Amino acid sequence: MTDLSTFGFLRVRRTIFTLLTLSFILGFFHRFAPGAFSEAVRGEFHISAAALGTLASMHFYTYTAMQIPSGILIDRWGSRLNVSIGAVIAGLGSIVFGLAPSFAVASLGPFIVGLGVSTIFVGIMKSNSLWFQENQYGWISGITMLLGNLGSVLAAQPLAVLLQWFSWRSIFIGAGILSIALSILTNLFVRDSPQDAGFKPGNQYIQTQRVVSTKPWLLDLKTILHNKNIWFTLGAGIGTNSTFYAFAGLWGIPLLQDGFHLSNNDASLYTTLALAAYGLASLGIGWFSDRIGLRKPMIILGNLLSLVGWVGLAFLPWNPGWSGWLLYLLVGASASQIVITFAVVKEVVLPSISGMALAFLNAGIFLGVALLQSIFGWIMDISSNGNVVNGEPQYVFHDYIGGLLLFAAVSFVGVISSLYVTETHCQSLIEEKAA
Image 1 (cartoon, rainbow, N blue to C red):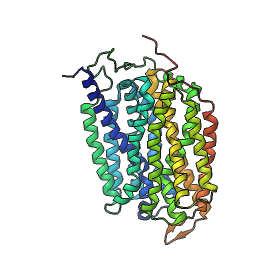
Image 2 (tube, rainbow, N blue to C red):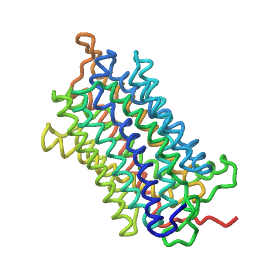
Image 3 (cartoon, rainbow, N blue to C red):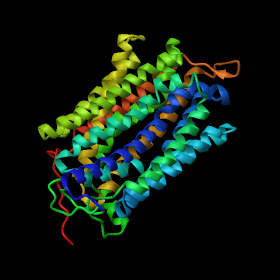
Image 4 (cartoon, one colour):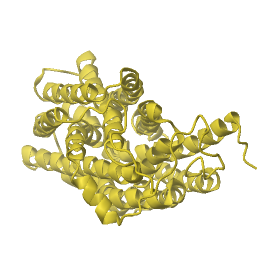
């Protein structure tokens, strides 16, 4: 029997948030792990930078393709069912990757993982919009990103340390088993809304009920596509987060290994710092935005910092040490503005299609990641002129400059887009009409 007291409500909400966040953490782990195991995988399969970029991007292609379908499914059938199924699929994909006998089969693993984790982000953000009040959304989104980011931190320096004791294969098999276990717990304990858990509207902690769109999904998608605010927020999100995810998830560690001859363990400390800055700043920026009642200035600032960071990495005479730490920290902290971007998207569409809108934004950002990771690798191969030693391609710092300038150009577009984002003052601009 459900405890309908305030304590009971908080306990149920905490359980739901915890289980969804644990799956979110695993999703972040898969997203950023290629950076730490790039050297091992490149050596085992004897592949070039372009091939490595393609392997890592397989996750993002399926993840991107499934975002809008995931948003539609979650808007209509809730987070519980969709996240449960997604976690099982992600777990199987991780196991396939760990057991892969060839590069072709290894590429299939991230493809399946991306399919599975595509439901998790939209699921937790939709759940947050129903279990937390509107004026808490920026704050809880920041906490969500901070906790989820633990997965990316684990995929950096801690994973590099684990690789000294365990093979990358055993690590991913273990992650797959954990994902399947979380799927079972999610199905048992997660509820889609307070009402589904037995709480009645009017409770002081419940501000909105789950609203399901009665329109065909294509009409809902058309509404989103015709909303100019969605496109401006997408440009801003690509400027900071597509670039940072592509860098921290793959090229940030090899840049230090090839350019400055750091070990995998030492190089991973830099991406760990960047990811930690991303997570901590996400919490701070979400709380601060809610506190001052403004969204737009944070989005503009994030894109400006991102642009400065990429230009600095490409042109400044930096080295491992404080200058390198500072630049990695800068691009990591700049990406925290995504918390505000997601809040704006939720506030400029009807609540009944907020899941689809968030999914559309997320799809665009991760399509950007997939493309940028691959293009970065192609630029490196062109720059290196096919330099190969003992069957393995060799790269130097100069080969990375073109990719860093690509990131700077994308961030510049993000700055321009952020200037046109609508200020919502932390409130929904569109009210759902009663049926």
